[in-house]
Length: 389
Ligand SMILES: C[S@@+](CC[C@H](N)C(=O)[O-])C[C@H]1O[C@@H](n2cnc3c(N)ncnc32)[C@H](O)[C@@H]1O
Image (tube, rainbow, N blue to C red; front, side):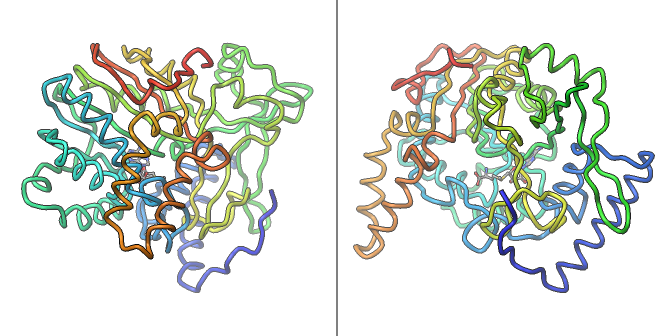
């Protein structure tokens, strides 16, 4: 993929990029001249006040850089709510913790649908790393009716008190920083950056013993020249955000694959991409702090991380199968019936993108991890691909 006709940056954006580049260059120097890609991605996305998620870029939606399922259609949230309602009913009530809630659209859709179903959670907690998005969520959710909005709370860190209910994350795993590696004839190298001639340059170094052992443990054999990503912090992150779930379900939705497909030689350059104003390209070193960086999720690693945190893998399926099992057609019909006639065809096309195989339907997967939960999970009733992990 080659960068194509990317929009030029405004003077303010160029100044923002220069400030972040100065911080990255300082980090390269402090690290002895070479910074791992993972550390670079952490800064590009989360450097306080400057990283993509830590600063004021519009990010989600039509005026932003990318569109997520809840931004595309409320039918997504209504289907997720149906699964939540089933879990909350089986547990006799409980609470929801949403991770990385974006604009707040998913939270609003879920809460309104749960209110209709008479299954509102006691609390709907949001753990959001971005101060800017947290503010947007507050504004969005303040429009909910009384009795719903007063159940919404923001957390500064993962909860420490045990609760029963659900943990939800849509498109959050793909935003966790990844390390990148390349297989060379002489061994594994790790990609990182140096600063020379006024520019950030990608430079490979021999990979650490930790990375070499990790790759050996996966059993994956790479072709010479093949590049892959590894989300090193996934295990700790899953442990941290699920530690207080005493009884219930963790529902994770994201684009990804089982490990052996993700690391197959057809993906010779890995899966890392950048999004800038709805254009996708493969240069992470431009538009610093102004473009999203994201990599596909290794769902085998997510299952392993869940098991290491004492969770069971209760289901893994495509987004299409999940949404259809959660009443997609019924929820779409209900949504259409609420719209003015002229809005209906576009709304239907947008919702269908969620399930079409060559759009989000098969690229995106849903995984359920459970703790002491014996109840049903209707989202996984059409087809469960757990055996493919
Ligand atoms: C691609 S956006 C998805 C937003 C939303 N879930 C949606 O579907 O529209 C990623 C979200 O995860 C948040 N995020 C990233 N890393 C996080 C972390 N470690 N903890 C909590 N939120 C995080 C971002 O700030 C953002 O809200």
